[in-house]
Length: 421
Image (cartoon, rainbow, N blue to C red; front, side):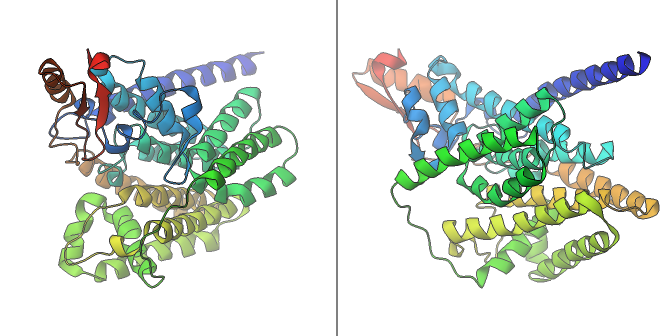
Protein backbone atom coordinates (compact mmCIF):
# COMPACT_ATOMS: atom_id res chain seq x y z
CA UNK A 1 0.00 0.00 0.00
CA UNK A 2 1.75 3.19 -1.21
CA UNK A 3 0.00 5.43 1.34
CA UNK A 4 1.13 3.29 4.27
CA UNK A 5 4.66 3.08 2.91
CA UNK A 6 4.82 6.86 2.45
CA UNK A 7 3.52 7.42 5.98
CA UNK A 8 6.20 5.13 7.39
CA UNK A 9 8.88 6.91 5.41
CA UNK A 10 7.68 10.28 6.69
CA UNK A 11 7.72 9.04 10.30
CA UNK A 12 11.19 7.56 9.82
CA UNK A 13 12.45 10.82 8.33
CA UNK A 14 10.90 12.77 11.18
CA UNK A 15 12.49 10.45 13.74
CA UNK A 16 15.87 10.92 12.08
CA UNK A 17 15.51 14.71 12.10
CA UNK A 18 14.44 14.71 15.75
CA UNK A 19 17.39 12.50 16.73
CA UNK A 20 19.77 14.84 14.91
CA UNK A 21 18.13 17.82 16.62
CA UNK A 22 18.58 16.21 20.04
CA UNK A 23 22.30 15.80 19.39
CA UNK A 24 22.65 19.31 17.99
CA UNK A 25 20.70 20.95 20.81
CA UNK A 26 22.70 19.03 23.41
CA UNK A 27 25.94 20.37 21.98
CA UNK A 28 24.50 23.88 21.64
CA UNK A 29 23.52 23.99 25.31
CA UNK A 30 27.11 23.35 26.34
CA UNK A 31 28.09 26.69 24.79
CA UNK A 32 25.40 28.84 26.39
CA UNK A 33 27.62 29.61 29.37
CA UNK A 34 30.36 32.19 28.85
CA UNK A 35 33.59 32.27 30.85
CA UNK A 36 34.72 28.92 32.27
CA UNK A 37 33.09 26.22 30.16
CA UNK A 38 29.99 24.43 31.38
CA UNK A 39 31.78 21.10 30.91
CA UNK A 40 34.54 22.23 33.29
CA UNK A 41 32.24 23.24 36.18
CA UNK A 42 29.90 21.35 38.49
CA UNK A 43 26.70 23.00 39.66
CA UNK A 44 25.82 23.31 43.36
CA UNK A 45 23.57 20.42 44.48
CA UNK A 46 25.03 18.13 41.83
CA UNK A 47 28.06 17.99 44.10
CA UNK A 48 27.47 17.70 47.82
CA UNK A 49 23.91 16.39 47.83
CA UNK A 50 23.57 14.22 44.73
CA UNK A 51 27.13 13.02 44.12
CA UNK A 52 28.13 12.55 47.75
CA UNK A 53 24.60 11.60 48.79
CA UNK A 54 23.86 8.95 46.16
CA UNK A 55 26.27 6.05 46.48
CA UNK A 56 23.93 3.09 45.96
CA UNK A 57 20.64 2.22 44.28
CA UNK A 58 18.84 2.55 47.61
CA UNK A 59 19.93 6.19 47.82
CA UNK A 60 17.92 6.96 44.69
CA UNK A 61 14.77 7.10 46.79
CA UNK A 62 16.04 9.38 49.54
CA UNK A 63 14.44 12.79 49.85
CA UNK A 64 16.15 16.09 49.29
CA UNK A 65 14.52 19.40 50.26
CA UNK A 66 11.51 17.43 51.47
CA UNK A 67 10.69 15.38 48.37
CA UNK A 68 11.96 12.79 45.90
CA UNK A 69 14.22 14.11 43.12
CA UNK A 70 14.89 11.05 41.01
CA UNK A 71 16.62 12.84 38.12
CA UNK A 72 19.21 14.47 40.37
CA UNK A 73 19.72 11.24 42.30
CA UNK A 74 20.14 9.24 39.08
CA UNK A 75 22.81 11.61 37.81
CA UNK A 76 24.56 11.41 41.17
CA UNK A 77 24.60 7.62 41.15
CA UNK A 78 25.84 7.25 37.58
CA UNK A 79 28.50 9.93 38.16
CA UNK A 80 30.31 7.46 40.43
CA UNK A 81 30.92 5.26 37.39
CA UNK A 82 32.72 8.11 35.61
CA UNK A 83 36.43 8.90 36.16
CA UNK A 84 36.62 11.75 38.66
CA UNK A 85 38.36 13.96 36.09
CA UNK A 86 35.32 13.69 33.82
CA UNK A 87 32.52 14.26 36.35
CA UNK A 88 31.95 17.85 35.17
CA UNK A 89 31.72 16.70 31.56
CA UNK A 90 29.25 13.98 32.55
CA UNK A 91 26.96 16.38 34.40
CA UNK A 92 27.05 19.00 31.64
CA UNK A 93 26.46 16.59 28.76
CA UNK A 94 23.98 14.45 30.70
CA UNK A 95 21.89 17.40 31.86
CA UNK A 96 21.91 18.95 28.39
CA UNK A 97 20.98 15.63 26.76
CA UNK A 98 18.06 15.03 29.14
CA UNK A 99 16.77 18.54 28.48
CA UNK A 100 17.03 17.97 24.72
CA UNK A 101 15.15 14.68 25.05
CA UNK A 102 12.37 16.52 26.89
CA UNK A 103 12.25 19.02 24.02
CA UNK A 104 11.78 16.08 21.65
CA UNK A 105 9.03 14.74 23.92
CA UNK A 106 7.21 18.08 23.76
CA UNK A 107 7.49 17.97 19.96
CA UNK A 108 5.79 14.58 19.80
CA UNK A 109 3.25 15.06 22.59
CA UNK A 110 1.97 18.34 21.14
CA UNK A 111 1.29 17.04 17.62
CA UNK A 112 -2.40 16.19 18.18
CA UNK A 113 -3.33 19.57 19.63
CA UNK A 114 -1.01 21.91 17.71
CA UNK A 115 -1.40 21.56 13.96
CA UNK A 116 1.21 24.18 13.07
CA UNK A 117 4.67 22.65 12.79
CA UNK A 118 6.14 26.12 13.24
CA UNK A 119 4.49 26.49 16.63
CA UNK A 120 5.55 23.00 17.64
CA UNK A 121 9.13 23.93 16.79
CA UNK A 122 8.79 26.98 19.05
CA UNK A 123 7.44 24.84 21.89
CA UNK A 124 10.25 22.30 21.55
CA UNK A 125 13.12 24.75 21.08
CA UNK A 126 11.99 26.88 23.99
CA UNK A 127 12.74 23.95 26.32
CA UNK A 128 16.47 24.38 25.60
CA UNK A 129 16.92 28.06 24.66
CA UNK A 130 14.67 29.99 27.06
CA UNK A 131 16.69 33.00 28.32
CA UNK A 132 15.48 32.53 31.91
CA UNK A 133 17.20 29.12 32.00
CA UNK A 134 20.66 30.61 31.74
CA UNK A 135 21.26 31.39 35.41
CA UNK A 136 20.57 27.97 36.96
CA UNK A 137 19.39 25.39 34.45
CA UNK A 138 21.95 25.15 31.67
CA UNK A 139 23.91 21.91 31.35
CA UNK A 140 23.59 20.46 34.83
CA UNK A 141 21.94 17.43 36.37
CA UNK A 142 19.73 18.62 39.19
CA UNK A 143 17.88 21.38 37.34
CA UNK A 144 17.12 19.27 34.29
CA UNK A 145 14.11 18.19 36.37
CA UNK A 146 12.29 21.39 35.38
CA UNK A 147 12.28 20.39 31.70
CA UNK A 148 11.13 16.90 32.77
CA UNK A 149 8.30 18.43 34.80
CA UNK A 150 7.13 20.52 31.84
CA UNK A 151 7.31 17.56 29.44
CA UNK A 152 5.34 15.60 32.04
CA UNK A 153 2.42 18.00 31.65
CA UNK A 154 2.45 17.41 27.90
CA UNK A 155 2.66 13.64 28.45
CA UNK A 156 -0.55 13.81 30.46
CA UNK A 157 -2.55 15.76 27.86
CA UNK A 158 -1.22 13.58 25.01
CA UNK A 159 -3.53 10.85 23.69
CA UNK A 160 -1.29 7.89 22.68
CA UNK A 161 -2.33 5.99 19.56
CA UNK A 162 0.34 3.30 19.47
CA UNK A 163 2.59 1.34 21.79
CA UNK A 164 5.59 3.63 21.38
CA UNK A 165 3.45 6.60 22.39
CA UNK A 166 2.14 4.77 25.44
CA UNK A 167 5.64 3.82 26.60
CA UNK A 168 7.09 7.28 25.96
CA UNK A 169 4.28 9.19 27.68
CA UNK A 170 4.23 6.75 30.61
CA UNK A 171 7.98 7.09 31.20
CA UNK A 172 7.95 10.88 31.02
CA UNK A 173 4.86 11.25 33.22
CA UNK A 174 6.24 8.89 35.87
CA UNK A 175 9.71 10.49 35.80
CA UNK A 176 8.20 13.96 36.14
CA UNK A 177 6.31 13.18 39.33
CA UNK A 178 9.24 11.16 40.75
CA UNK A 179 11.50 14.18 40.21
CA UNK A 180 9.34 16.97 41.58
CA UNK A 181 6.47 17.00 44.04
CA UNK A 182 5.02 19.89 42.02
CA UNK A 183 3.82 17.30 39.48
CA UNK A 184 1.30 16.11 42.08
CA UNK A 185 -0.86 19.10 41.15
CA UNK A 186 -1.51 17.42 37.80
CA UNK A 187 -3.52 14.69 39.55
CA UNK A 188 -6.95 16.28 38.81
CA UNK A 189 -6.03 16.67 35.13
CA UNK A 190 -4.86 13.06 34.82
CA UNK A 191 -7.89 11.74 36.73
CA UNK A 192 -10.41 13.53 34.53
CA UNK A 193 -8.65 12.49 31.33
CA UNK A 194 -8.35 8.87 32.48
CA UNK A 195 -12.10 8.84 33.12
CA UNK A 196 -12.87 10.33 29.71
CA UNK A 197 -10.27 8.39 27.73
CA UNK A 198 -10.53 4.60 28.00
CA UNK A 199 -7.85 2.39 26.53
CA UNK A 200 -4.21 3.29 26.05
CA UNK A 201 -4.35 6.56 27.98
CA UNK A 202 -5.16 4.73 31.19
CA UNK A 203 -1.79 3.00 31.02
CA UNK A 204 -0.14 6.45 31.03
CA UNK A 205 -2.38 7.51 33.92
CA UNK A 206 -1.49 4.35 35.83
CA UNK A 207 2.25 4.96 35.38
CA UNK A 208 1.79 8.53 36.57
CA UNK A 209 -0.28 7.30 39.55
CA UNK A 210 2.47 4.85 40.52
CA UNK A 211 4.96 7.72 40.44
CA UNK A 212 2.60 9.82 42.55
CA UNK A 213 2.41 7.08 45.15
CA UNK A 214 6.19 6.85 45.39
CA UNK A 215 6.53 10.64 45.61
CA UNK A 216 3.88 10.86 48.34
CA UNK A 217 5.55 8.10 50.40
CA UNK A 218 8.95 9.81 50.21
CA UNK A 219 7.50 13.27 50.85
CA UNK A 220 5.48 12.20 53.88
CA UNK A 221 8.52 10.45 55.34
CA UNK A 222 10.79 13.48 54.84
CA UNK A 223 11.60 15.89 57.66
CA UNK A 224 9.64 19.11 57.59
CA UNK A 225 11.26 21.82 55.50
CA UNK A 226 11.08 25.32 56.89
CA UNK A 227 9.68 27.87 54.45
CA UNK A 228 10.87 31.44 54.26
CA UNK A 229 8.70 34.44 54.99
CA UNK A 230 5.92 35.01 52.50
CA UNK A 231 3.11 37.48 51.97
CA UNK A 232 0.19 36.99 49.60
CA UNK A 233 0.36 40.63 48.52
CA UNK A 234 3.85 40.03 47.08
CA UNK A 235 2.76 37.38 44.62
CA UNK A 236 1.02 39.36 41.83
CA UNK A 237 3.81 41.92 41.56
CA UNK A 238 6.59 39.34 41.54
CA UNK A 239 4.73 37.23 38.96
CA UNK A 240 4.13 40.20 36.68
CA UNK A 241 7.84 41.06 36.52
CA UNK A 242 9.68 37.77 36.96
CA UNK A 243 7.36 35.70 34.77
CA UNK A 244 5.40 37.98 32.43
CA UNK A 245 8.16 40.59 32.10
CA UNK A 246 10.84 37.95 31.54
CA UNK A 247 8.62 36.13 29.06
CA UNK A 248 7.83 39.30 27.09
CA UNK A 249 11.32 40.82 26.93
CA UNK A 250 13.65 37.97 27.75
CA UNK A 251 15.62 37.64 30.98
CA UNK A 252 18.51 39.54 29.41
CA UNK A 253 16.50 42.77 29.06
CA UNK A 254 13.94 42.64 31.86
CA UNK A 255 16.41 44.16 34.34
CA UNK A 256 17.06 47.17 32.11
CA UNK A 257 13.33 47.65 31.58
CA UNK A 258 12.73 47.48 35.33
CA UNK A 259 15.41 50.11 35.94
CA UNK A 260 13.92 52.34 33.25
CA UNK A 261 10.15 52.16 33.90
CA UNK A 262 9.73 50.25 37.15
CA UNK A 263 6.19 49.03 37.72
CA UNK A 264 5.28 50.33 34.30
CA UNK A 265 6.88 47.11 33.08
CA UNK A 266 4.36 45.12 35.11
CA UNK A 267 1.47 47.06 33.59
CA UNK A 268 2.84 46.54 30.08
CA UNK A 269 3.50 42.82 30.56
CA UNK A 270 0.06 42.18 32.10
CA UNK A 271 -1.68 44.17 29.36
CA UNK A 272 0.08 42.29 26.55
CA UNK A 273 -0.40 38.85 28.11
CA UNK A 274 -4.03 39.32 29.12
CA UNK A 275 -4.89 41.00 25.84
CA UNK A 276 -3.62 38.14 23.73
CA UNK A 277 -5.12 35.47 25.96
CA UNK A 278 -8.56 37.08 26.05
CA UNK A 279 -8.71 37.63 22.28
CA UNK A 280 -7.60 34.09 21.50
CA UNK A 281 -9.76 32.42 24.14
CA UNK A 282 -12.83 34.31 22.90
CA UNK A 283 -12.21 33.17 19.32
CA UNK A 284 -11.10 29.62 20.06
CA UNK A 285 -12.94 26.38 20.61
CA UNK A 286 -12.50 22.67 21.30
CA UNK A 287 -9.82 20.77 23.19
CA UNK A 288 -6.93 23.09 22.25
CA UNK A 289 -8.72 26.02 23.91
CA UNK A 290 -9.53 23.96 27.00
CA UNK A 291 -5.99 22.71 27.44
CA UNK A 292 -4.64 26.17 26.66
CA UNK A 293 -6.60 27.65 29.54
CA UNK A 294 -5.53 24.76 31.78
CA UNK A 295 -1.88 25.43 30.94
CA UNK A 296 -2.27 29.12 31.80
CA UNK A 297 -3.94 28.22 35.08
CA UNK A 298 -1.12 25.86 36.01
CA UNK A 299 1.48 28.48 35.08
CA UNK A 300 0.02 30.92 37.60
CA UNK A 301 -0.78 28.38 40.32
CA UNK A 302 2.59 26.63 40.25
CA UNK A 303 4.52 29.89 40.46
CA UNK A 304 2.45 31.13 43.38
CA UNK A 305 2.85 27.76 45.10
CA UNK A 306 6.61 27.82 44.65
CA UNK A 307 6.85 31.35 46.03
CA UNK A 308 4.68 30.39 48.98
CA UNK A 309 7.01 27.50 49.87
CA UNK A 310 10.28 29.16 48.86
CA UNK A 311 9.32 32.49 50.38
CA UNK A 312 8.15 35.61 48.60
CA UNK A 313 10.29 38.02 50.62
CA UNK A 314 13.57 36.81 49.08
CA UNK A 315 12.01 37.11 45.61
CA UNK A 316 10.98 40.73 45.97
CA UNK A 317 12.50 43.12 43.45
CA UNK A 318 14.32 46.13 44.83
CA UNK A 319 15.86 49.07 43.05
CA UNK A 320 17.91 46.61 41.00
CA UNK A 321 16.47 43.50 39.35
CA UNK A 322 17.97 40.13 40.28
CA UNK A 323 17.40 36.76 38.61
CA UNK A 324 17.38 34.68 41.78
CA UNK A 325 14.97 31.75 41.47
CA UNK A 326 14.73 31.99 37.69
CA UNK A 327 14.08 28.24 37.47
CA UNK A 328 10.61 28.84 38.90
CA UNK A 329 9.98 31.45 36.22
CA UNK A 330 11.09 29.06 33.48
CA UNK A 331 8.41 26.50 34.26
CA UNK A 332 5.66 29.13 34.23
CA UNK A 333 6.95 30.72 31.02
CA UNK A 334 6.95 27.32 29.32
CA UNK A 335 3.39 26.68 30.46
CA UNK A 336 2.23 30.17 29.45
CA UNK A 337 3.77 29.69 26.02
CA UNK A 338 2.04 26.31 25.77
CA UNK A 339 -1.24 27.99 26.68
CA UNK A 340 -0.72 30.71 24.11
CA UNK A 341 0.16 28.22 21.36
CA UNK A 342 -2.80 25.99 22.20
CA UNK A 343 -5.18 28.95 22.13
CA UNK A 344 -3.82 29.98 18.73
CA UNK A 345 -4.40 26.41 17.56
CA UNK A 346 -8.02 26.60 18.70
CA UNK A 347 -8.86 29.63 16.54
CA UNK A 348 -10.63 29.07 13.24
CA UNK A 349 -9.86 32.50 11.75
CA UNK A 350 -6.97 31.92 9.32
CA UNK A 351 -6.04 35.60 9.35
CA UNK A 352 -5.83 35.80 13.16
CA UNK A 353 -3.80 32.59 13.23
CA UNK A 354 -1.30 33.96 10.68
CA UNK A 355 -0.88 37.17 12.69
CA UNK A 356 -0.48 35.25 15.95
CA UNK A 357 2.01 32.76 14.51
CA UNK A 358 4.10 35.55 13.00
CA UNK A 359 4.10 37.47 16.29
CA UNK A 360 5.10 34.38 18.29
CA UNK A 361 7.92 33.50 15.89
CA UNK A 362 9.34 37.04 15.87
CA UNK A 363 9.11 37.32 19.68
CA UNK A 364 10.67 33.90 20.17
CA UNK A 365 13.51 34.51 17.71
CA UNK A 366 14.47 37.92 19.14
CA UNK A 367 14.41 36.98 22.81
CA UNK A 368 15.95 33.53 22.37
CA UNK A 369 18.79 34.51 20.05
CA UNK A 370 19.74 37.54 22.11
CA UNK A 371 19.53 35.59 25.36
CA UNK A 372 21.15 32.38 24.21
CA UNK A 373 24.62 33.01 25.68
CA UNK A 374 25.54 34.79 28.85
CA UNK A 375 27.27 34.74 32.21
CA UNK A 376 26.14 32.32 34.92
CA UNK A 377 27.34 31.75 38.50
CA UNK A 378 29.59 29.04 37.03
CA UNK A 379 31.26 31.41 34.57
CA UNK A 380 33.89 32.51 37.10
CA UNK A 381 34.84 28.97 37.97
CA UNK A 382 36.74 27.42 39.56
CA UNK A 383 37.34 24.94 36.78
CA UNK A 384 36.73 21.32 37.74
CA UNK A 385 40.02 20.00 36.41
CA UNK A 386 41.89 22.68 38.37
CA UNK A 387 40.04 21.68 41.51
CA UNK A 388 40.88 17.99 40.94
CA UNK A 389 44.56 18.82 40.45
CA UNK A 390 44.57 20.85 43.65
CA UNK A 391 42.89 17.99 45.48
CA UNK A 392 45.52 15.51 44.28
CA UNK A 393 48.25 17.87 45.43
CA UNK A 394 46.65 18.06 48.88
CA UNK A 395 46.58 14.25 48.96
CA UNK A 396 50.26 14.12 48.14
CA UNK A 397 50.85 16.56 50.99
CA UNK A 398 49.30 14.12 53.45
CA UNK A 399 45.53 14.78 53.45
CA UNK A 400 43.22 11.77 53.80
CA UNK A 401 40.25 13.44 52.12
CA UNK A 402 39.74 16.66 50.20
CA UNK A 403 36.96 18.93 48.99
CA UNK A 404 36.60 19.48 45.25
CA UNK A 405 35.06 22.84 44.52
CA UNK A 406 31.71 23.27 42.79
CA UNK A 407 29.75 26.45 42.06
CA UNK A 408 28.52 28.01 44.22
CA UNK A 409 30.13 27.15 47.56
CA UNK A 410 29.36 25.39 50.00
CA UNK A 411 28.16 22.43 47.91
CA UNK A 412 31.65 20.98 47.42
CA UNK A 413 32.25 17.29 46.75
CA UNK A 414 34.07 15.54 49.59
CA UNK A 415 36.16 12.63 48.39
CA UNK A 416 38.80 10.39 49.95
CA UNK A 417 42.29 10.52 48.58
CA UNK A 418 42.09 6.79 47.88
CA UNK A 419 39.19 7.41 45.51
CA UNK A 420 40.77 10.53 44.04
CA UNK A 421 43.87 8.57 43.05
